[in-house]
Length: 244
Image 1 (tube, rainbow, N blue to C red):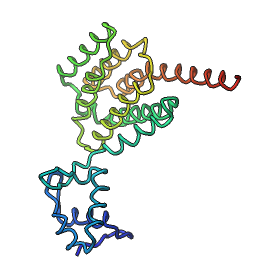
Image 2: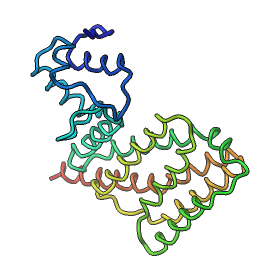
Image 3: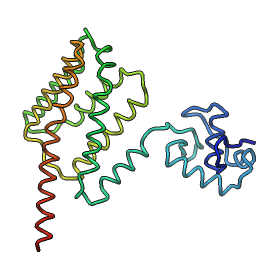
Image 4: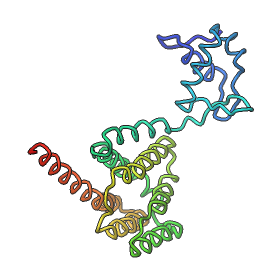
């Protein structure tokens, strides 16, 4: 019988412990419901409730008609929770997005030295192509979230820290979904963001961590101005409502 190492002993904890004890990894099949009931000495209803909880956390994955498997252990629940937080005030509160942007900046800055070591004295036509794609779209007045995401994903894909890669992707997803939910206007100086992407790449290839950090800050500056303007508008509207 599997017992939790922690202070609790819930069905969820017992199933998690079983995954650890058995050395199961993402994609591996889970024991059947009957087997879990017998091995963990818990009721069928407790197993079902626990599996629903674990599925919501992406710890297990239920494939209808095929069984239950160890999940991908992604940060999807974090993304969903933060997106709900961003929507909670019906798009009138910019705090959640501003906090996500601050976290994205912190992540980008935190890996400066690692990225410089990786990209120093290299040529990266894929990243150059993404910057050019952003520039063409921006000149046509079009947004470029796919190219932007691909640029940052490619940078972080070279890092050995898988959790950092997942966090960066999670915050990017929250960012890109929250912006239209909050109905923010596009930045008028969006070409500055494109130039900053080029500056980030050039700094990495030159092995200049200081220049890379400066380019990261410049990259987010147009969005920061949009958020500041939206906050001022929101504050003015709130003041007008209170005067009525």
